[in-house]
Amino acid sequence: MQLIQTRFLLGILLTALAGCELPPRDQTGVTQLALQTSDESEEARTNEEYVMVTTAVGMPMYVNHDQAAFKRWGKQMGVKTSILGPADWDVPAQINTIEEVIGTRPTGLLINGTDPAIAQAIDKAVAAGIPTVVYDSDIPNSRRHAFLGTNWYEIGRMQGEEVARLIGGKGKVAYMGILGLNNMEDGFRGMLDVFKRYPNIEVVGKFDDKANVETAARITADLLAAHPDIAGICGFDSNSGPGIALAVKEAGKAGKVKITTVDWEPEHLRLVKEGVIQMLAGQKRELFTWYGAQFLYDMVHRTNKLSGNDTMAGISNVPNTVNTGLLRITKENVNQFLTPSGPPTP
Image (cartoon, rainbow, N blue to C red; front, side):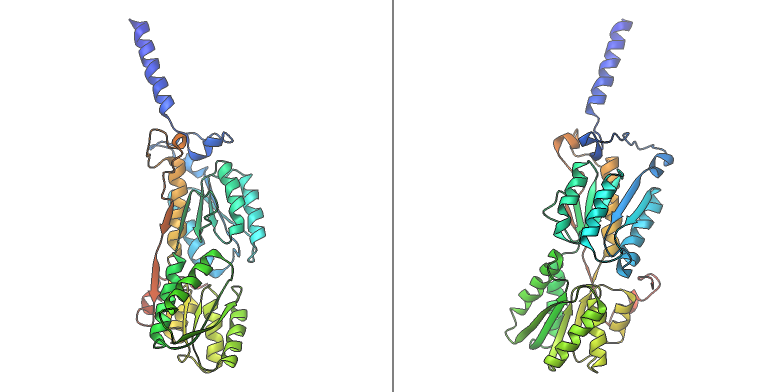
């Protein structure tokens, strides 16, 4: 009788073990992580390290929004967080950073989708069994586990609709940003689709300001000289707006040339309050990184299970794509974003 009971208990144990699912990193066999349980110790979590890899790592927009939220998330969850990447906008250097980080076996990777060229590095991370989430701009040709960010086509539509309204559906307009990036090109397309409905709007130029304030200001000054009657200018990167506004103010045309742009750093908000910029299409950047990091954690800890063994079934237990939405900031509501709860001054 005792032998039968022993065999019975052993059978239950083996069945339970067979149904256990390893976290995502285990699927390659490169690294074996202990299964996390609901009563795991705080010490176990502190050994986990989640790494953000971006480029232009010191850019105020990234520091004030993306990185600040990522650090707060790590502190709240009791895990280690690291932020790595080149100081300048250098995609090859970002790729090198990703590949170097893969060798350190982080618990999860949160990658800024700066350029389609990073797809191969993302695929290497996934192949190494590292949970990998992309934020800001999607890299659809990669095997990333999830993407969180803004619908850039809608950013373009928002700007197009606003400029068309501000200039009464007629006049010359121009736009600028970082040419060639998937998200920017989607934004340009959304704006141009709006302008197609207005036969009296003439697009006089598409310009690459390379995310540089001085370059955006120079382009705008040249535009004002070539087209003194230009009615509106749209900006698509975080430095477009301040650069456009600088040149428009210097030309004495603040408020006359209508400006819309993206992002909502303190300088952007101040320019809206002054009436130099008429509208900001603000991204909810804190949501990119907070929930992106949480997705990584949920993958590792199997927060939600969709099958008996999600890894064997080839199922990801986090959403594939998340649109975090937009903020529309104008002179009417800008004070709400200038409060202490808004973005910190660099």
